[in-house]
Length: 147
Image (cartoon, rainbow, N blue to C red):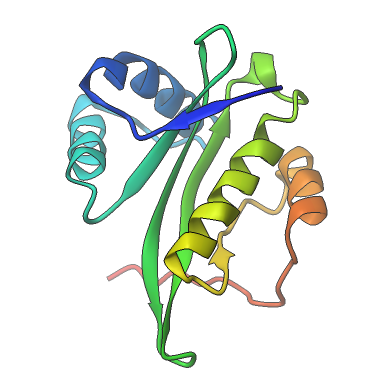
């Protein structure tokens, strides 16, 4: 598959929203208009969160990713963090994730990030198969504190 990855623009909002709703549905997260609008505004500002929309050769939006810079105090460096990565179910197995991760790796190199880190659900076996091929699994365990 040959993808074109671009920063989402105003004309891309419907395609982006369709994909992001699919991502939220996969993870069982409610996705109302207010949340969509907040995330979209972050993407449009490009300061808090950045994104890429993946289109195939026919121009169809098939995937999205959201990422950001993150300080790593122990390294005294900025690293990358991949918040969201999603490919439309009709295009899974096409190599889209490999291309998207390769593009993110190039972006990280340009920015001088030593690595990009992300998390996924333990039972996300299909995606983890790709991640195991494209990245190194760490031994970090994730916790979440709810105030």
